[in-house]
Length: 369
Image 1 (cartoon, rainbow, N blue to C red):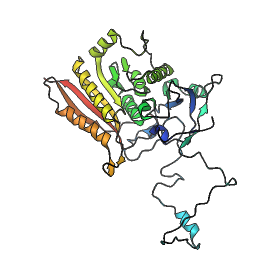
Image 2: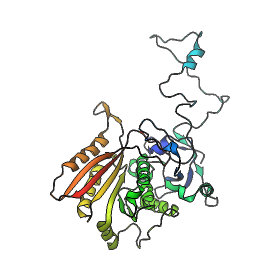
Image 3: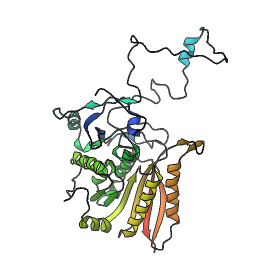
Image 4: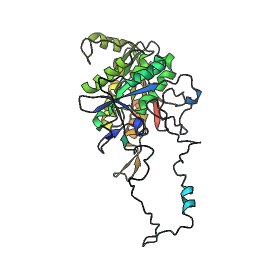
C-alpha cells in the first residue's frame, strides 16, 4: 500500500489535517477494517518557547513529534493573503491575455513527466509507514532515546465516518491534557471520571497524578483501542485489571460515587444530540456524587456555512453554550452550578496547534447551603 487517499465521506482530525506530509506508522486494521496508526507525543517539559497561549495565532505544529514545515515569521512560505509579488515582476513586459469579457485569462499548463517532482504529496493524501508483525517498531527506538516519562504513545485512526470520530486524536483533547499537566496539584490524589474519552489521551495524562481515573466511552472497538493505549503507556501509570472487560463492578460504582470530584469531557459537543446526552449525564452524576465536583470541558468553536442560514454559523457551539446558561439558571434546591471560562494562557506542553477557537470551561457543582 503506497498511499492512502481519504474519501469525501470521511472526517479527518485536525491533528493530521495540518500535517499531511508526515509519515505515520500504520500498525493494524481494527474490527471495522479501518487503518490504525501509532503516533508518539512528546512532553515538552522545560521549553520556554512552548509557553505562549496560542490565542494570537501561536502555531506549534500538531500531532506526532516530527517538526512542522515553517509557516510563520521568517518562513520561506508566504503568509495567506500576502500576494505573489515575485510572479508580477516576472510577468512585466509580457502581453496579458484577456478573455472576451475583458477578464485576465490564465493558462494553466498541465504537468508533464519531465517536470520536477513536487516537494511533498498533495494535501489530501498521506503516506503511512506500514509495519508488519515481523518488523521492529521504529517508534520504540525513538522512545528509548528520550526519557520514557516524556513520551506518550497513542493508537488512533486518521479518517473515519462521523460516527467513529472518537477513534481519532482531536486538538480539544490535547488542550485538556495541557491543562491537566499545568494543574497537576489540582488532580493529585483525586478520583477523575472522563466522559467520551475516545482514544484515552486525556485520561492517560490525568492518571499520571490522579488516584483513580474512570475512562469511559461507548463501542467495543473504541474501548479496545483505548485499552490498548493504556497498555502502551504503562510506563506512565498502572492500569486496573477488571474481571470483565468494559464493565462496572459494584465496587467501581460505589468508589465513583463516593470519591469522584473531577469530571472531564473533550470534543464531544459537535452534535446536538450528543451534547444533550452529555449534559444530562453530567447533571445526573452531580446529583449522585457524595462530594462537590468540578467539570472541565474542552470544546472547539467550529465555523460552518449553512444553506439554511446562508451565512457562517456555529450551531453546535451555540447549542453547547445554551446548555451552560441552562445549568446556571437551574434551581432545584439541592445543587448550584457555576460556570466560568478558563483563559488558555497556561503553558503548552504537547505539540499541536492551539488556536483561538479552542476553549476550556469549568462547571463548579456545589450543594445549596
